[in-house]
Amino acid sequence: MSTASPSRDLRWLLLAIAALVVGLDRATKLWIIAHIQPGHAIVLIPNVFRLTHVLNTGAAFSMFEGSTSPNLVRNVLIGFSIFAVVVVLVLIWKMGRALSLTSVALALILGGAVGNLYDRMRFAYVVDFLEVHIVHYHWPDFNVADSAIVVGACLLLLEMLRPQRSA
Image (cartoon, rainbow, N blue to C red; front, side, top):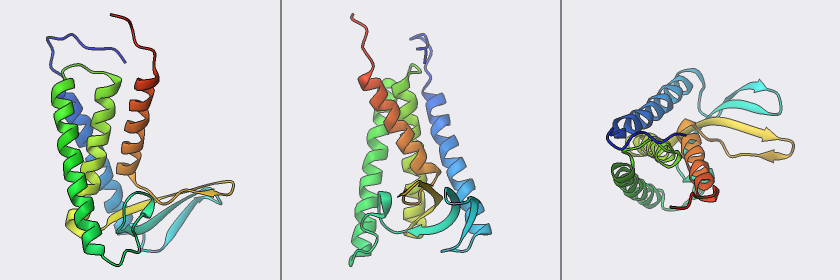
C-alpha cells in the first residue's frame, strides 16, 4: 500500500474503514437474527460452510463459554475490549496520518473490536454465524468482526515480517 503525503491527514479514512466494519458486522448479525433461529443452520456448501446462529457468551473460539461465573467473564471481556479499543484509537491517532498496511490493519482491528463489544455490552453475548469445515478441521463459529480482527492481525504480522527500508 502506498503512503500518502505527510501534509494530508487520513485518520478520517481509517475511522471510516472501522465504521464500515462495524456496519457490516451489525447488518450481518441482524440478518442472522431475523432469518435463523439460535442453534439452527443453513448449509451453503455441504460439509464445508454453513450459516449458523450461535450465542457466544465466551471469548474467541468460545473460550470460557461454560464458565461457572458468566458475569465475571462478560465483565472481564468488556473491560479488555474497551482497553483494546482505546489502545488502537491512540495508535491510529499517532500513526494514522498516512495510509499504510499498519494503519489499515489497526482500522480493521478497531472495527472488529467495537462490533463485538457492542454485542457483549448490549446482549451479554456475541452472535457468531460463520461455520467452516476443511477436511477434518472445524473452526469455531465466528462473525464479520472476528474476521476483521484476524485479517488486521495478519496484516500487522506481514508488516512486521516485511523487510524494512534502510534510512
